[in-house]
Image 1 (cartoon, rainbow, N blue to C red):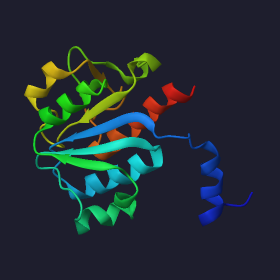
Image 2 (image 1 turned 180 degrees about the horizontal axis):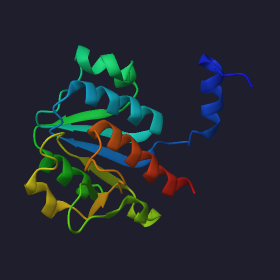
Image 3 (image 1 turned 45 degrees about the horizontal axis):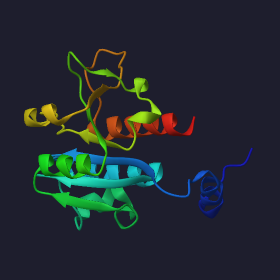
Length: 174
């Protein structure tokens, strides 16, 4: 076996790429770490989602800390900034997106219960410490959780974002 590199990897992945971006937008609700945001840009590009929405205190390009982990993907992923998460949610609800919060609550359901009819989907990812703002919950159509099996109660926000995106995309391509 020989490991692929550079253009060989891209050639392989381009065969899988759909004609248009997946009908998923990610709404980042007051993410505080520019490094997490950069990682989310990179993941969003690899997942080929429609758009990344940065809200509130979420750092946005140009920002050298974002670029450190984004590795140039801020120029590849469509993104926009909203001063308020509720404004972003309202915008995407009006465009026909279902709103899904990624959070653990009494009413959250495992993310693998998503069905193709739940798309287009706007996935809201919350602050690393406080999670999703309380005023966002009434706007949600779905509250999704990633089932965890260890002793720690949560994943890093950027890691949870990546896991969630690829579980969602699996529902679209299977």
